[in-house]
Amino acid sequence: MRDRVVALIESMQADGGPIEVITERVMPDTWDNAVVAFLATPGAFADLSLPEYLNRVVQERLPLLPIVDDIRRFNFRAIPQSFAAIGERNAKGLQPDDGKGVEAAM
Image (cartoon, rainbow, N blue to C red; front, side, top):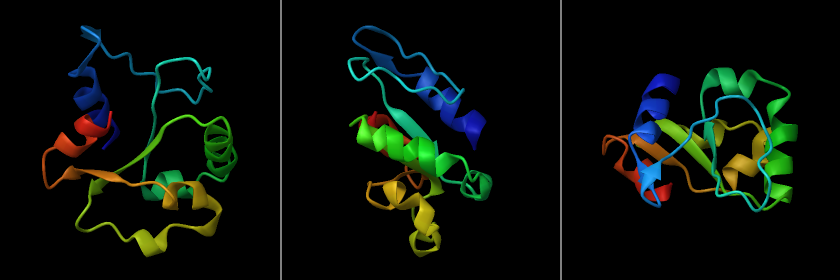
């Protein structure tokens, strides 16, 4: 899923230029033109350090976009309570629209 999301985002244009994808966990400055994309996968939910990072993203009022593989099949009730920041956001899926919803949200 990660490779598909990175390829999708790298194919987009913003303000006439390409979008830079940073895959390390960094905290953008609040004045940066940035979106923090969270790939909602079992591995991500198993990472116990992620909730603290995501809560800081929310506290800094940065855009946070949860991305799921297939919006029709994702079990939103299974999101761990520690990931409450994700549950408060509208997720987008790579399917059923081949990432068009993700692209529009970016």
